[in-house]
Amino acid sequence: MKQLILQSPAKLNLMLHITGRRSDGYHLLQTVFQFIDLNDRLEIATTTDGSISRDPGHSSISETEDITIHAARVLQQRFKVKQGVRIAIDKRIPVGGGLGGGSSNAATTLLALNQLWGLDLELSELATIGMRLGADVPVFVMGEAAWATGIGEQLTPIELIEPWYVVIDPGVLVSTAEIFKARELTRDCVAITIRAFQRGSGTNVCEKVACALYPEIRQAIDWLSRYGVAKMSGTGACVFAAFDSLEQAEGVKSRAAEYWESFVVKAMNRNPVVEQCGMLFPARRPG
Image 1 (cartoon, rainbow, N blue to C red):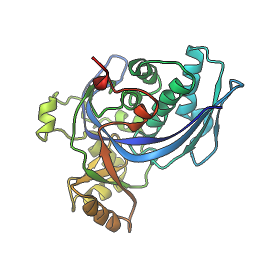
Image 2 (image 1 turned 180 degrees about the vertical axis):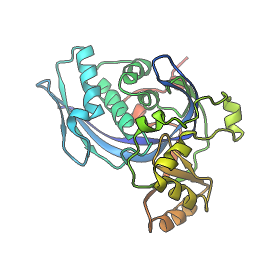
Image 3 (image 1 turned 45 degrees about the horizontal axis):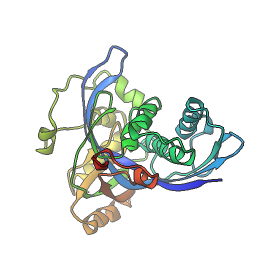
């Protein structure tokens, strides 16, 4: 038996625009992904009997709906792998919070099994497979903070400052499908450039819709706005604000604790799981 124990990180969407819609109904996006060191803990161990299963652990998601199980099965079937895997997940990333926990777990599973099963696939190959599982999976596989377009899968690495963030979980489970179906959702944003974003342009068009459907999100944003520029991540529900120091962030978190579960996290421009699974980031490859 071979085993890896990995910390699967969350992400923030620092902005999110919708510029149109494809003929198949998928929304065309402009967004910026940055990782944070709020992690789920995954234990991924090979088995010899070909079975794919998950320990119940602390996950609230059933095994039949677990994206990590789907990820393992896709790899196993595509490459006719005879080995199996047992996955244990200790969830810390809020479910339905817009932090990409499920997508991160799927990407971590793909990266880990690529090593454990000796598949020797490139990151780009794993990202293409990950796209079948979810639009946010490729950014976790490629492992670099990114400017994303298309439906979120067309990635351009971007270097961002790495502040401390306070992340607040308003305690509601947001349905992404509900947000994207809302009639009042803005779907015709004028495309902006990376340079414009770096100069301060960009909002999250899903925030207004989410706040109307879930007043708890608006309450958290209004409260956090007392201390910094508060935003919602993805389609919600979690909100965040950046701070220059750990001490500042800890001070705000201590005040938030009276009302919500909250986290102090550090921004990361690299997903450490990539290197932990023996892969190199594309920009760092020799030649």
